[in-house]
Amino acid sequence: MKVCYLDESGHCGEKENPNQPVEILCGVVTDATKLFKTQRDHADVIEILREGGVQINELKAAEIYRGRKEWANAGHESRDEVFGVLLRWAKNRNCKFLPCPINSIEFFERKKAGCEISKKLQYPFEAGALNAVLALQREFRQTKKNKGKTIVIFDEQKKHDDRLIHILEEDLSFTDGYTLYEAPPRAKAPPRLDQIIDIPHFSKSHLAVLIQVADIGAFVINRYIDIVLAGQPEKYPGERAKIEGWYKIMSQNMIRHTSIDPPGKDELCEYYRSIRPNGWTAKSMSET
Image 1 (spheres, rainbow, N blue to C red):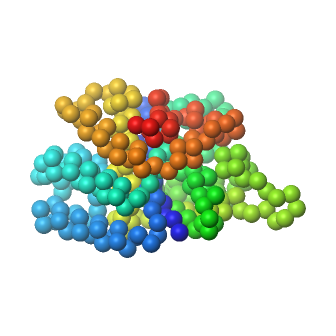
Image 2 (image 1 turned 180 degrees about the horizontal axis):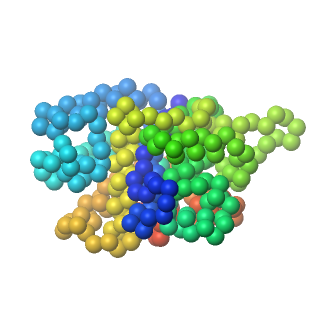
């Protein structure tokens, strides 16, 4: 059984915002048998931080990185080490990252121009979230004895959660080319998302350890796109090299890039490839 925890970084709104041009959905995929040890390791990390004077119940990437709230008195070297330790820990636990960045500016431009897919998905978060669910379906469709054994858990996002469920409850035939779904001509057609248990679930981040790791992953991808691909200046010397190092750890532990950006001329596959942030592809990340 597989479990995928997802969080986001960036736009996450309902209106076009030039100051938030990218919406990042990032998943962390693990084997369910490893969850107990994962939770125990996480508790150990939290306890070590408390003993060091950082009184927290959960790890939030933006607060750690920028030294906010409980992290205000922690030096940047200590805060950076949290990122490095957790990303290496995920790698050593054989977790796989699932990055789904969306160019939110391009999404809204297409929606205004009448793009049916953008209109159906409504907002960049839903586009990234559906991308992640379809990527999991495609990734595990040929895995033996995994049918109906993938749990998907998102960090709570209120209205976005309800809209995603509504999309998944409607006709999903437009996703068939992405997931390589084929209904048998005479037998009863299997569910289109037959790898996924029931429907996606939603959890508060402090209750789900790997959502916090997904939050860190989404933040790293967001900063990588800002600095390396979009050419934004570093906030301090060495920031780019640091972000590139963390990004590389993630790139070495991804699900297959063809599950995230499927090749071919299917309309939905082409759509996702066309609304990536400029310069980003799943293949280019996997080869970093």
